Length: 340
Image (cartoon, rainbow, N blue to C red; front, side, top):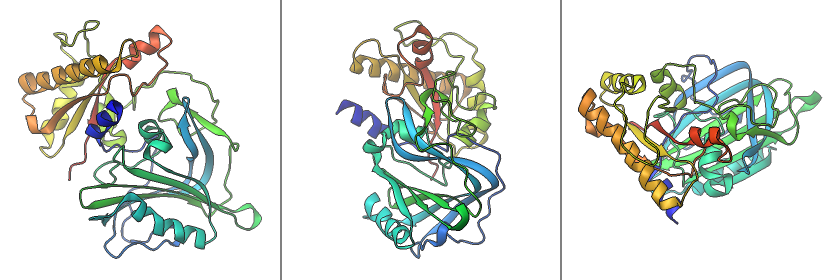
């Protein structure tokens, strides 16, 4: 129950994992992929097209550190739609689209709701567009993947991700088709420690501890990935006091926020798995609060652009069985929030 309440506090929007070079947005056609019919109020907020790309299509939950996927290749079209969803559930949003798919000859490969999908970890290990085009409530989203066979080995693959915020519903569609689709194997997996790596041959083994978009500038990482680890912060073991610094990550984050008053981030503290959950949540929240205070007091960031949360050991990025993994899990991340 405590873990659920913590995630409920987050209800964050994140962009897709595994950002790739993609063509500019193409929104003029207002046509859903795979011939789907959208509600009359639907607005296409963004479309990304890769003429020759690849996509790890989830076909199972995130469990025991891995997620079952198919690696599909070909023309990849990713769309984000916003609809009026006052009083609607995510199931009511998804069901008509699922019915259209089955009616058009698609076979459902996987269909799940938030917790059953793998919750936080599932969402972080699949491709999702950035806010404000797409929003994902970590406790209230639904996902499905589907396949339709065609002649001569030409097939179509589709995923749907739906969620909501207030009176708005958000629907993401990713379609791969129009060419022969290359598959890895029927039980392809994404290692938990390879978050963000959704291209190339999967080995099924953990090879490195990720820093999301570690080769990108902080601002670019936030806009493309939706979250970034503030890797240079220093805290004493078991304490929440932030070191004196200076910390380049905080200077960069402050510049990003002061550039646009409409930007908001959540500072999310994380711990290793040593000790009980509740004190770890308290410690992680206190560390995030210390970072928020530093941004306000030293860099002049407006308080309304920031919030501090703590999730304890609920969202590891590495194994807690090693010193290296535990060190990586003790971190504070900045998460770009929905700006609507």
